[in-house]
Structure formats: C-alpha cells, structure tokens
Length: 289
Image 1 (cartoon, rainbow, N blue to C red):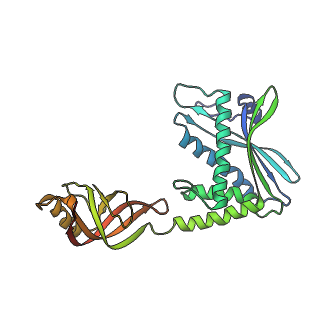
Image 2: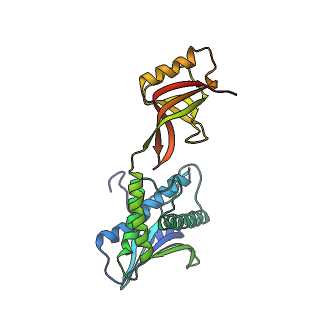
Image 3: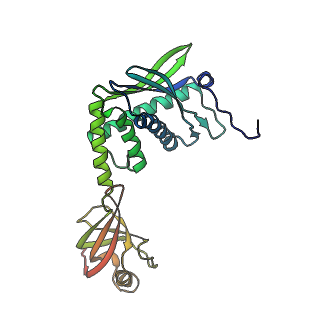
C-alpha cells in the first residue's frame, strides 16, 4: 500500500462505527430515470454538508451514500454523515443523533417553505441550493404515487429507532418544482431600483473621499423608501463633489440639510435593500429641527 493512500471503508464497517444514519426511501409506481435517481441522493448529501457547515463551527462532514435495498416500487439508501470534530473535542453517539434530528427538521422546514412559496429572507438564495432541492423533488414528481421519506435513525442494542422523519408526495414535489422556477426568476431580476428626486438626510457623515461605486462609510436615510439608515455609495463623481463640499466646507451643519437626489437602491438576496447609490443631486434645502 502506498504512503498516504486512503482506504475506503465498507458499508458494514461504517455501520459498526456510527450508531446514527440518515435513511432515504423513495417509493414509486414507475421506474425512476437514472439521472433523477442519482440527483435524489446527491442533493441530500449536499444539503447535509451545507447544514453542518453553517450550523456547527467545530464540526465537518464527509457524507457517503449507500443504496441498501432496491425492490419493486421502493429504493432505500443510507447516508453515513462522516461527522468529525475539528477542534480537540469528540462527537458522541447522542451528539450525532441530535445533529441528524436537527437536519431532518430543517429539511422538512425548507421543503415546506418551497411548497408554500413563502421563503424567508436569507434562505434558499443560491442557484446550487435551488438545484439540489429541484433534484430532490424531481425524483418523484412525475410518478403517480411517488413518495420521498427521510429518516434520522439510531441503532441501540441492535434495534433501529426512528428519531425524526419527513415525507412528501408527488403533488407536493410538483408544487415545489414550480415554486423553485418562480424563485429562480425572482432572484435573477436586476438588483437595482432607481428613485427620482427623493429627500435624503445624513445620519452619519465622513469628510474623506470615497471611490465611485464603493461604500463611503456614511449613512443616510430616505424616509420615502425606508425609515432605516442605509450605507451611502456615490454613483457619480459630480454628485460626490457637490455633497462632500457641503460636508467639508459649508458653514451649516450637514445634519440640518436635506439633499434632493436621484438614487439607485442596491439590492441583495433577491430584493433586500443594501445601500443607496446617489447618481444626481438636484437641490439642497434647510431642514428645521
């Protein structure tokens, strides 16, 4: 054996080492296309890796899928999570069980978000995530009686105990696919929105120059758009020169002035405002206390 060569463990070896596994059961009335079959399992492994990465700072995973049983109308596969503690800690059997339980709960929660078409801000925003969820749903979407069931199971004294489970059927899978397509289109919309002649006031100023298109370190509020202060970006050199003159050289307090401007609202995450970019200054007015 060459130095550094990694020896893959067998299913029975992994089963002997880990007392908790994820089991995916796909029930179908018709044969599953090979691409959909593979996508159902890889999407689960990908989502589990994301879950561990974003939820646990000191844990990493190396999931491996094994098809355990194929019979008429049913395919079963086990996912061994490969959970490893990064720091000088260990992951006990009960820790593994709790992690798998939490994952199944989040899996069900995220599927429900997609089924209802009501995804919270910050959730399911990347093309890779949406592709994985589409692959998970596609595996049974075209089957008349298709079912997709995920279980977190724990083995104790040779007995298999289901700690958490979530199941969806073909009609729900089709609804998810449609909502994923709608979400893809929504997230692909241009992430800017222009507003003309709005009143902008400073809530934090800075005398230093800023590169065009970069955050200036200043905060402004435009009440016509939001009651929250947002980072300011200068979208043109002329607008920056005019506004910086008022900050640096004018005798009056900049916080007692209003700026009538054209702004582009910079968006992130499919429509969440992130900054105001000033592209034109029309007028400066005095604001009473």
